[in-house]
Image 1 (tube, rainbow, N blue to C red):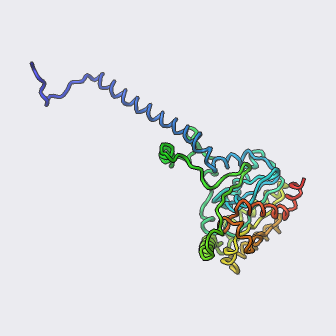
Image 2 (cartoon, rainbow, N blue to C red):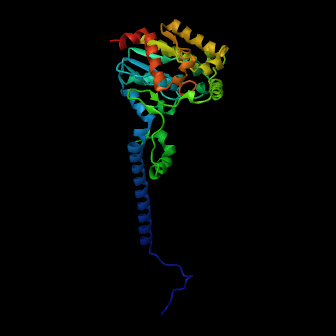
Length: 321
């Protein structure tokens, strides 16, 4: 029996080789397409229903209320929406984001009568001013097979969590049905020294820059308020409460005072109303209302919301109906 010399190459017909190559490429294509559609399913049915930001962006263009609150995490945690009010705020927003959110809300057909616009000094801190417009607000959230671009860097992490025994655990922060966020941690659970250190670090991070009036953010804020007032929308600009330890860290600081003065001037020049509630929860007993140095618990938010509405006549007239 004749055996083949191992050194002799196997003669495979060209047609057969191309057929095998085509089969291989076809299988790869099927796997890629299958992975893409499976990933789209994973994001839409498992990730986004648990994703606060996705749900918040839907609320931004679908919620209708005569009173709307807009700001960053402070307003998101501190204001409780109700029958006549919605909270369009979200974590990490700056003045540019707030402007974009309000304009998106109005472009969706919403016709609010009152806007509660955050007016806190830390909106002029370096880290807020340098952030720029959030990608998910720049041109909407672009999608690839129904998956928002902001999800793309995390796709393999999503699969890892989905296939693990842990799955997608619920986070400690919850989104309210009409906007706004809640969490239950308590600042008074820390020791007094720990609270002072945490509040001091937070206040240092959030210190306004010098000469805020020369910043583009200051001009944009004033333009936004004028735009709203010119449309017949009542604007209440709100400086929100911080903890006693935070107040101690900023007391007498000229940059913080300059920011407060800026907001007062904008209100005076545009016909808006400036409401300073920064010290409204500053007693030792009020510490139970804080979840950290500058955000409120749900109980604290309920207390603050009542005071805020009472301080804004245009809003109180609507809510009292």
